[in-house]
Image 1 (cartoon, rainbow, N blue to C red):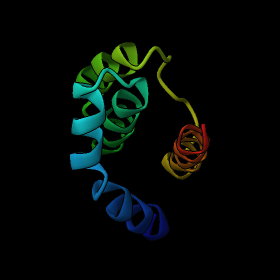
Image 2: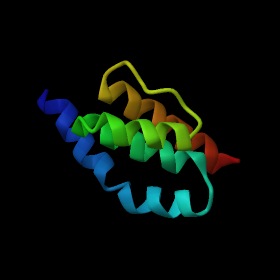
Image 3: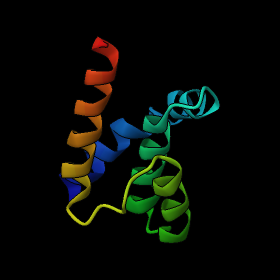
Length: 79
């Protein structure tokens, strides 16, 4: 719905940061890419990024996945 697209739009600002994280070998960057590709409907590409991030493809809503990604990023930032 519209709310999910709004959240997704905010998350799209993470593309650059995700690219940087992937280059540094951080699995969270792969997860961000996976979630964005999944929301776009590009499941093949999403699957690649989930594997790179060491995760299985999410099954819930995009909003729930973005909340989980944000929590993971916050945890990683506090370490």
